[in-house]
Length: 492
Image 1 (cartoon, rainbow, N blue to C red):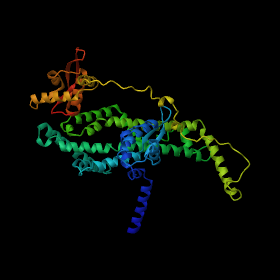
Image 2: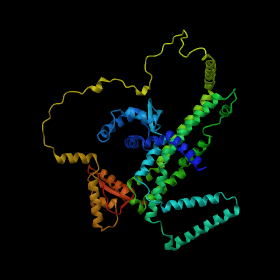
Image 3: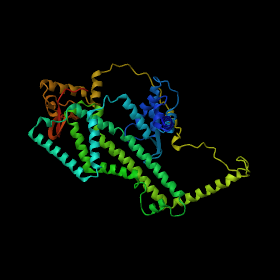
Image 4: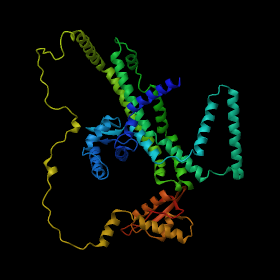
């Protein structure tokens, strides 16, 4: 039994290794280069790039990567074709313009996530993760208990625990303290780790809808007679794709994301978490991921919802326009021809001349999007460049040009740290910084201070502050914003 079990497992794993696009990417020769390029250009949730744009970006990357990696001189298009054939990239027609687009498949997202987890592994099993597992199991045991008495006792026990916690908070009991910084950071990390799988989930759901759409169209052609079950349901107005198990599951998620009340509550919770003291200890990437979590969920839901609607409408149009009748007739003719070819193969060889000639196109067939017109202007280098006179560069003028185009965060950081040093560690608001150090770049300085406070300080959502400054034109201006507070020194 052990040998049979090991053999069955080995065969199953071998089939997985041969068929899994995720493992195919991880064992590729240039997996480091592939992962870096795809993560940079297509790693964000819902990212789609025109094929020509992606080819140009990858060519620029390859020009630099060849100095450090032993790679061939193949073009970006050749690499992208290989990645598409391997199931890492998905190439689809563009919906809003002519041409085609590239996006990462679910296998590509899974491979990138595995590499990120290997690069930054979790050191230990966190307490928050164990508590989440225990809480989920306990709630599952209650929700699935057929005994109403035990369920009532469990709910009453939970109510007593909540009432006791409320009483401790009202009394100021030290046992009712807030979550410490370490445990709070662990819980945020666990939430973000779970959210990392959403792009792959969205891509997987979209691929599943494509398979379902194809199988339903196939069933319409293969159904005998004029009254197939799928055909009757479409004629009755049923959306077979939206009514499928995958469609109902996704619709429930989409309803949550689109609900204004639930979305607003979700955003408020994220804002509250980011305003806590421990949020300042989180890496910048984690704070950005948490802040954009709801937007990423909405973007992914919008893309999949569009695909779901497109397939559902296309299926109804395919049936109501009676296109399926023509396809079914063509399928019947092909089947008849194949049936007659089986006995004929015993008497006629496949390459026997039949006395008929058919002119074939000599043009090599390919995608129209791959064709590039020759433009002589692209090779025009213009007039010959002459030698410029050597002049002395004015550093002051260069610095002034730089200050006109960019915010001087070095100056703003020095101003903030100077005010905090004078106050001996006491918090300082953006308005207090502007009062001590005027905005030398006008509104750009104000925006820079607010940006620094949002990333390295705290935001008081309950209070507002009035800011005063003079613009670069010398005119006094004012604005009312949420109160931004600096609690510690900042760095650029």
